Amino acid sequence: MGFDNPHLQRYLAIGAIMFVIGLIGFITRRNLIVLFLCTELMFQGVTINLIAFGRYQGNLAGQAFVIFVLVIAAAEASLALALVVLLFRRRNTLDADAWRELRG
Amino acid sequence: MAAFSHSDLTLVLPLAAGVGSGLAILVLCVVAGIGTVLLLPGKRERSFRSIGGALVLMAGLIGMALIAKIAANYTSGDAYFWIFSFIAVVCSIRVITHPKPVYSALYFVLTVLATSGLFVLLWAEFMAAALVLIYAGAILITYVFVIMLAAQAHTGVTGEIGGADYDETSREPMKGAVVGFAVMGVLLFVIFDKMQGMNPIEVAAAEQPAMPIGTEETTPATEAFVVTPDVPKHEHVIEITLTPPATKPSTQKAQEHGPATVPATAPATQPATVPTTRAATQSTTAPTSGPATLPATQAAASTQPVLLADVPVTQKFPNLVEVPATLPATSPATQAATQHVIATTSPSTAPATIAVVTTQPTTNAAVAVVSPKKSVVSQPAEGDDANGTVRGIGAYLFSKQVINLEVAGLILTLAMVGAIVIASKRVHSEVPVVHEELTGPATPVNDDPHSIPVYGTDNPAAKAFPEN
Image (cartoon, rainbow over all chains, first blue to last red):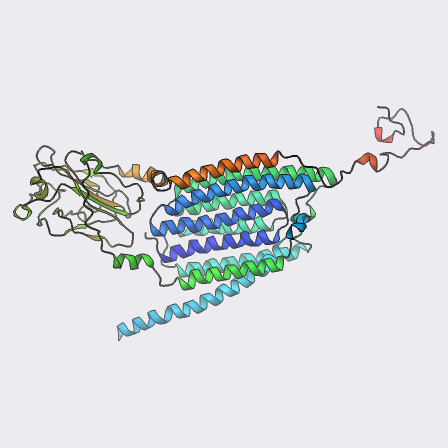
């Protein structure tokens, strides 16, 4: 079974849909933890794109880059959750609107 | 006339399909956007939310049907793709619309599992396992920990059980949905319309010659037959290494031996054709009985191998691959279409070994001619299938991405240290802590000795003067 354009299009469509759903969640949700969950959702869409392109081109670069995306996601999760814990201890809420003055 | 009508149809049909799918994508994005606005958490009735869910579900199903119509010719593995992608999309919508963060995290675990299923369909088994381990095993656990801590502290302070206000309402759902679904519409339009009829691999295959000949490298014989690590298992691999070309190649003919020999009948400078086929279900080893004398190897005094070709041929190639090698090897792989053929000459007389290895049942084929100092190295097909991807990724990462890998490890270490530093920092709460004893006495003091029993009750809240 070859992996040609219609196959690639299907996977790219799923990746795009998941990315956009994560984007909508990131815009509209107010809980800080759910915001970072939505960034993880966007990472999922990007990894689907990378793996589909790697399969399409027939090399391993896509999968290797997914490893780096996982690394970035893990680092981002640890730092972001530490920040969320810090912010929660200061304001005693997880509301992103509690830090509205950061908008400037 | 028939040719004209065919070309006319091929010109017209993508145009009509393009306009139709563009409109369909637009309508579907609008419908899904309205549904998402209704589905996002907010102060509205439950019936509206169910209507929004129905709208999103309908738009998603119609969109999937459209994608299925576009990819109608391809049915292998389709059911798994639709199941996994349906689970992924529905669960990701639930991640962003569920009012409770714990349920969002659990739905995200389902999304990760469905995505790893898609990875398996894309022949990225190791990445599927790594995704489940890292995301569902490590990252989501920390998310759930933090969510639980925050929820416990929240209910402990306010005393109410239930979702917080910032979870029950969403911030500007209309604008967010409009922006998001505009992005989605543009992306899907580009994917499905602008990519129609564009196939860069076919173009590259048509422009390139099938074999970049001329990379003559004198490598030691023991390093000659090296499985190139960065070539995944799904490709044709034609790797021909042979001794230096014969001085009088055209005068000699090779004898044919056995049913699975390699008939070398062409002159040495003539391009040999190696038809590689796709099906390999069995594995037979057929050594030739007699001394199969190959022209190139007979005349070769030195045993320096010449690396002729290292050609990754993509799946788009037909079964026939022209190999303009100086070795006249016409491998009858079409005769052995369902076999895993290893044809070896006897090592005492003939200093060449020809192995035709068809390792992948679908598209994988490897043709190798190794120099005499090396015995036949042919990986078993099942072993290649089992660890080909992991080994390939490891070789790729440690051969071509070493710096990036080290940088990634450094980033992880720094993130861990930074998280510890951030979380161990002492902060003072800006919100004044509300203590219950400041608001007044827990029980009103009643001085009337006849109203309530001051002593002699077990309920401490009913005591006017509770003894400690």
